[in-house]
Image 1 (cartoon, helix red, strand yellow):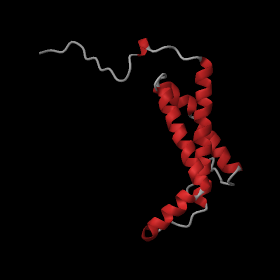
Image 2: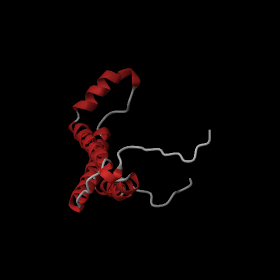
Image 3: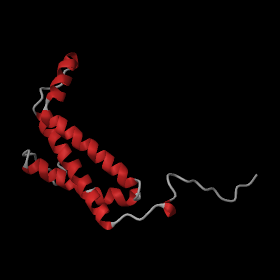
Image 4: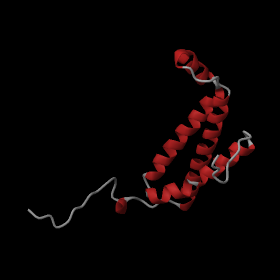
Length: 127
């Protein structure tokens, strides 16, 4: 039995989806970039306040982690980021969403440098 063509359908049929306004796309992109960048910033700030991880003290470590307001805020922001990105993927292609939201990586590096005092190695160094 020969197969003349193979059709694989993933997700919704894009021809029946209502077009999304440019303003909605732009607002969602800004929201995605900001929640991702500030969520990562808050998690980094919060976890920097924690002692080194010891498996033997796991319950106490988890209690300290989730009692830290910076960790909680970072977790909420990253949850919002994930829901916004999933939402945008429901009306836009992956090949559009990922590149336009990639500026979040640059913003995260800048926030880490100027807010947390981190160092971004602009060139790889071989020790």
